Image 1 (cartoon, rainbow, N blue to C red):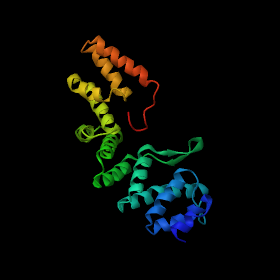
Image 2 (cartoon, rainbow, N blue to C red):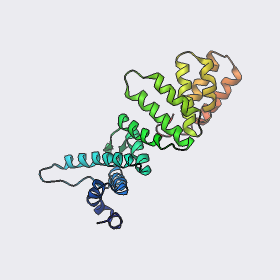
Image 3 (tube, one colour):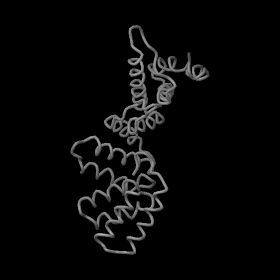
Length: 233
């Protein structure tokens, strides 16, 4: 069957038919197969002698593999879904793990995306997430590499440029470099609770500016009613 014919079928019938198309390097089939897995609408098909749990595990592993193979063929939707899935993970009902967090694999997707020279706001997301992956996956953070990525991201546009500024500001704060931290935290204070709270502490304990301290305190109160996006700040 062709991809179009499979997609015209009821959702519950699509999974087993998308698999051979994905294996045959149909990028759209790779993407839709993974979407079914991550939406918990397909759990694999048992082969002879295979347990139900093994079939599920194989199907979920295949989803990431298909996305990565399509990503290597420069299929942008697969790059976007793949990096997000392995960076954040995917869970179903009752704590079911549909896609495990895998920062090593996330970096592979992000590097492919970076090679496509995305627009500045998207490039900021890619650089920020790659830096965060390096930070989270290593027992000893390779700070030179992480800082370089976040500094590049912070110079770009969009919400992830702001997120990179916030994280860089906190890094300088943690190392006692308050003068370096202030402009970075200032850039992010209105949208990042992390930036606002650290800037508030700087003004309370180091600059001793009551006016700036109160401003940051008010921002923190306002941000308490908002929720940061996953993987941001």
